Length: 169
Image (cartoon, rainbow, N blue to C red; front, side, top):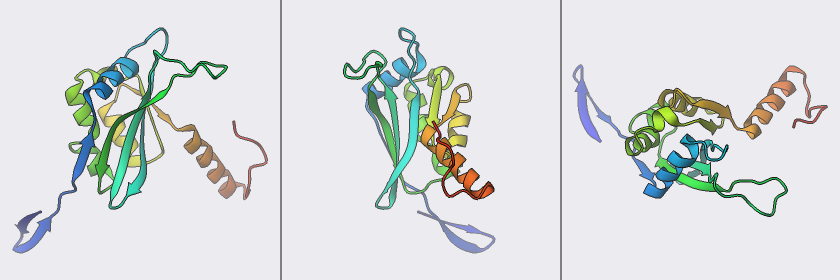
């Protein structure tokens, strides 16, 4: 914390700590699977503020290894792998934009800003804006679960349905 004065009044400016955790292998994988087309397969970078851990929020990224397929499913599915994470005390525009997980990732993988194919996140406005600013050439997707919930919420308000009279795919 830093004590400052403004117009004769003293105040304390607090900084929100952030811890960013990743391995070089995770960043190499994101560059390979989310920025390149491997045998017609591309991965999306998934980003989500998953839960609160004590006073911290946990921002988790994940991606698919497009060189591997599961054998047990009828349709080949690439496994999801854990990407870099960030622990922070505040959620909001400032947390996501200033010295963020995404800026650190781009510092380690310089072409990520221009070559990331797509990212997916929930409907949190500040996170979507930060990702949109950092990865302006990438396609933005909204998580299917959140889209479904948004449709259900809007329909229940607009049409006064407790449950939708139809099934969402």
